[in-house]
Image (cartoon, rainbow, N blue to C red; front, side):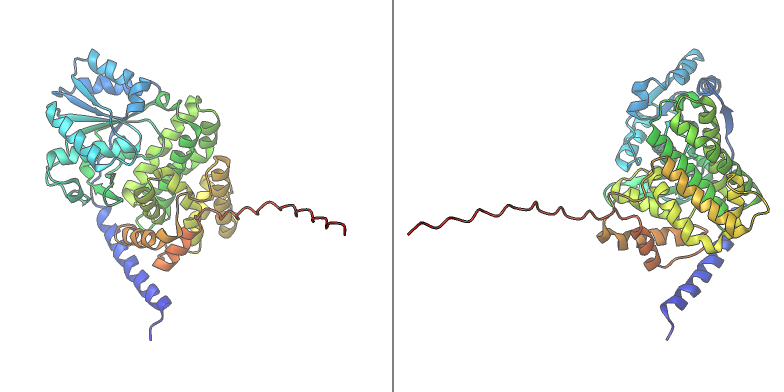
Length: 429
């Protein structure tokens, strides 16, 4: 009788071979790269460029907070000065839910637009990409999820990220949420990559520290998972290592001194480099699990990645010692020439320390034991059908891994001691 562990080994080898074969195919798929404008004021320079492209009307997709804070002003002033017409759709919320995206699609059509500027964090970027695909391929959004489900090319997109985390300004994917089924859906199409993007650190100086932390670790996760997976190329490796170095050098500064333009600019570059890396080399179990947390609990994606990254790295450790050693050198927590095992452990420790310094929790407060089997099943399905993970895990192993993120049990408070009632004195005879 074949044991469960042997079945898992055979299955893992089969999946590994399949994913490696898929990796050989994907490296020949052309992925466009946007023209990047970098530095303070680059969002206004992007507006100047777009105004010269002769669009009929531009849809700016963002959220209400960005709109109220006036962060659009540099871009919109430049568009107006250049004679360009635009409208603003500022209703995007966290997770880019399908009903709001559909509203954005309708808004695009009502105003006769012919291009999109994605302005904001990951949700605005993902919503913009989904709108761009759906406008050209009018069918339900859940039918566009997957690889190259749109026959016609998406409308042109330009991007202005306001967080340094998702790298969505250079990626081929959009992650949207299905609030009815509590799932995240991924739309993948290389034609969704924006034509131009502005990395403007001035737009990031007002980010709260906890968002700076979570989005920064999101970028770190992109770089690490791209570097340790089985679809690596010399290009993706170079981008991933550069991103890791920049993040370890600048994220703590951006977190503690949010007005530091140099740290903000370098973090925005790190996010973009990590985006280039995982667009070519893909991600792994951290993302597969984080997507389930986001779908069920609406956990911010960066925070979910940050919580799970140390657990997944420790699970994968035995299969990626050499790669972890190279990451340690890139992060400047070790030096070339040290033993690989020593360097690998130094990197794992450095990730733990970075999370600690940024106030990242070691557990997910919303996580429930009863949800874990379904979360693990969905995460394994996502990872095993699309990600080149370096070490496969069974559903049970995935459940055990997720269980590490359960919130600590709080012991019930002991009841206060009650004072004994004084004994009644008997009557004298």
